[in-house]
Amino acid sequence: MLLSQSSKRHRFPVSLISQAVWLYHHFNLSYRDIQEQMAFRGVTVSHEAIRYWCLKFAHHFIDVIKKRERRLSDKWHLDEMSLKVNGEPFILWRAVDENGIELDVFLQKRRNKASAIRFFSRLLRSYPAPRVIVTDKLKSYVKPIRSMCHQTEHRTHKRLNNRVENAHQPTRRKEKCLIRFKSALGVQRLLSLMGKVRNIFAVEVSRYKRKAADQRLAFTAAKALWLEAASNLISA
Image (cartoon, rainbow, N blue to C red; front, side):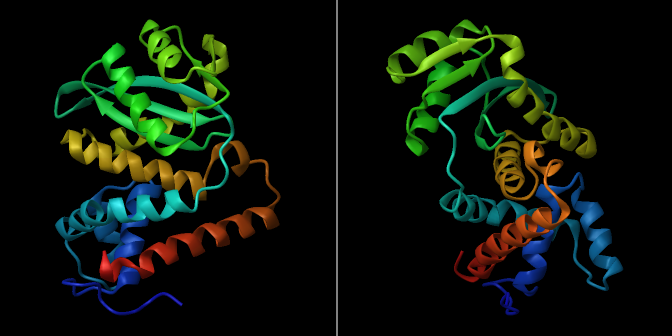
């Protein structure tokens, strides 16, 4: 049973805080949308309080989910997308495995070799080098993969990379919902947790192929993991 106490220095119960964080990162909702949903339930909370909870507890949920991640495949798909943060252009680097499980996202200013090296360094700190890496024809990938993943086969073909290109879609939908992203740090936190939430709740590759009973079991397991993370918010 989820703890009902308020988390440290917060007057709202852990169950409500964790639900607000989940709603923001799982659905195309703004802070004000969630404020209205809470008001409908008879809970008066400001959108600024919800924003503060999402910023404060994002890393906690990311860490807990990451420790419980399912076994990843040894084939990675990497791609980049352009987006604007407060009117300024940025490049979002993303890596997923062949099943659509997101490994990491990293917001950077450039799409070049140095940026590719930084992204690979992040990935290899968390995961062993894969058997295969699939990218588009961006030349910035070639030398970093050759030097940092010696035994990895590098494949470059546009049609082979649909898996990660499809993974960009939730980011576009969230960007449209929020009208625009406001800060680079906020975008990094938002998209990092969004990816982890999608990993456990709604990976498209299996979401629409499971039977209803299997889908309910998967949701129950994902919910249990989220509540486990939420139960530790008091010490977070």
